[in-house]
Image: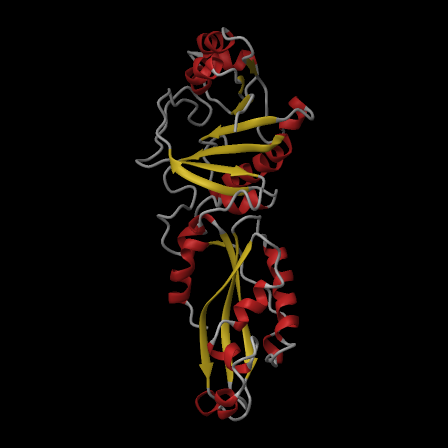
Amino acid sequence: ERISNLLVCGDGDLSFAANIAESLSQVQINLMATVLEPEHTHRDVYERSASNEQIITSFEGHEVKYGVDATKLEDTFGDRKFDRIIFNFPHWRGKANHRYNRQLIDSFFKSASQMLSPRGEIHVALCEGQGGGSDTRSLKEYRDTWTPAFFGSSYDLLLTHVMSFQPNYNLSSHRGVDRGFKVGSSPEMYIFCHPNYPDLIVDRNLQMSCRHELHVVLPDELDDVDNNDCSSQYSISNIVVGNAIEKIVQSIVPEGIRVEVPERCILLKEKTGYEFNMVTYLVVYSGEGVVLRRDQADKYRHAAELEVEKHIILRENRRGRLVSRPFPYYLLQSIIEDHTI
C-alpha cells in the first residue's frame, strides 16, 4: 500500500534520514526527520549535523525538526498522522538497565500509536538480543529482553513482522555523544500496526499468547465415559479424549483470537488421592489477527469456564485463576516442557 509520509524519531546525527532522503523523494514520500536535542546543541555535538540537514532539506517536502521527544510526539505534531514512524536503536540517554529502556519503548508506543494513520506502520530497530525474538529459548530469557510486542499490545499495536536489519548509515549518538555503537551481529527490525483482521493474519511465531488450565470432574465410573454417546459434539467422551473443549472455548472468543488445547492429562483418583477422577487441560489463547492483552484473555477464561460448565462439572477450587502473563507463542513448547499441568 502506497504511503505519503514518513517520520524518523531520534535520528542521532541525522545520518539515517540523510541516507534515505533521495530515494523517498523519488517516490513522492515526504520525510520528517527529528532529533531530541535543540538545534544549537545538535550542532555542537554532531560533526555532520549541518551537512545532513542540508542533504535532507534539499529535497522538496522533506523537513528536519529539533527538540522532538519521541515519547511526546503529539506535543510537536498535534493531530497530524504519519504512514510510517521509524525509531532506530532507541536507548535511554546514558547508561541504563532494561527497566529504563522498557519505559522508553512503552512511552514511545503510547505516543506513536496516536500519530499513526489507520493503515500505517511503526518500525523499531533493536540491537541483537533486545527484542526477544525467536532466538530466545526460554520464558526467563524472554523476560530479560525489552519485550516490545508486550508493550505495543497496550496501545492496540500488533507485531506483524520481524526481519534482519543491517544499518548502512553512520551509527552515532552513543549515550548522547558523537560516537558509534555496536548493534551485534544480528540486529532486527520490528514492525507494528493496528489490527486489520481478517486481511492481516500474523505468523504464529509472532503471536502473543496467554494460557490457563481447566480442570473438569469425570463421572465416578470411567465406564460412563466409554459408554457415553459419542455422536454428541460435546459428549463426555469428546470432552475427555476429543476436541470438544477446544471447540467450546473457540466459540466464545472473538474473531482474530486462536484457541489451542495442546496438553491434557487424565488424573485417576486412585493415583491422586482426590475424591474424584478429573482431566486437566492447558488452554492457550493467541492473537493471530487482533491484539491479545492479559485482561482480555482473562475475560475469555471466565467466559470459557461458564460455557464448559454447561456440559461438564468443573473442579471448584481451580476456577477463577488469572491467566498467565502474555508470552510469545514460539515459547509454548518450552513452557510445556518446563511445567507439567
